[in-house]
Image (cartoon, rainbow, N blue to C red; front, side, top):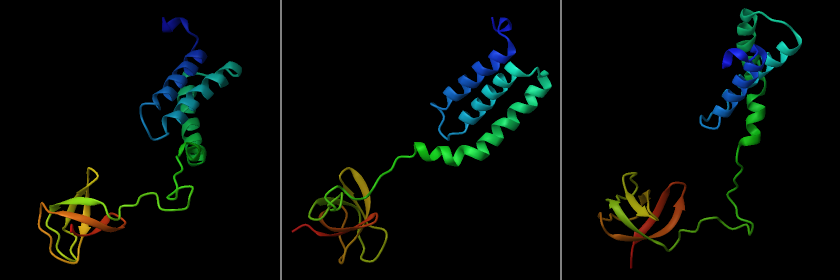
Length: 151
């Protein structure tokens, strides 16, 4: 079946197939190799080339496109997230909520852990708090929760 397709159209079909593989493999690299294959196929519509010339041109065009446009094109596919909601307040307020100590909390030590909202967080406290006790969240500092024993 493929032997009936002219080589110039085969390059274009292979290029489209390579570009569609980008949907399954992250990294935004395969698109440029697909574009390289399509470019060789389109060039063959206008210029007769030997197979060796095609095989040399394909990686050269692909790598030049990759180096030239990847960073620029990748910017269009990056999500943009802000840490503020429309009201200007913080997006997450943990103060006053309850958590469970999963690893003993020692003051000024990075060893303490709590389970909070189904996730495990580093925890710090002013006093020693044993595993299994419930605590109240006082504040959040990056990925560490400052806690105190539940009253």
